[in-house]
Image 1 (cartoon, one colour):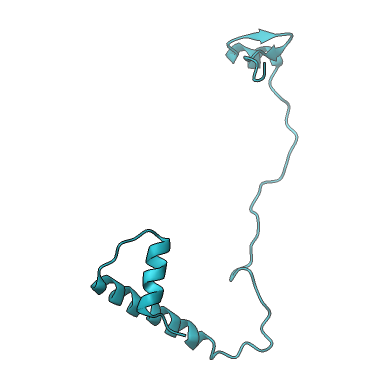
Image 2: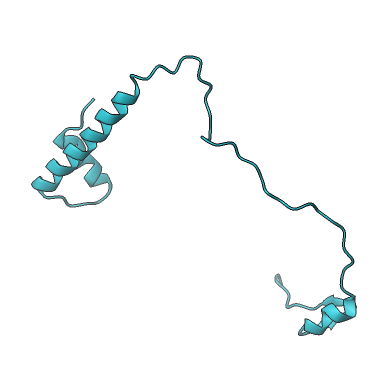
Length: 95
């Protein structure tokens, strides 16, 4: 498979790009080089190789969840601009 000048013009049109003839030629050559490299990968023997979603194994690095006492409500509400019945009072979101 190779990219023609017409293919480059089509993609440029879809992307709303105006390309000169020299740019069309340049991008066509670059895209063909990419496809040539991708074809080279098809030569690899992948029999017996399991598909992977990541090259390296993934692991979450998280600390252990420990129970700690919370702050007293009076101390927390010191930062509240307004409070009502031991809760933060905020403007209504829906009317």
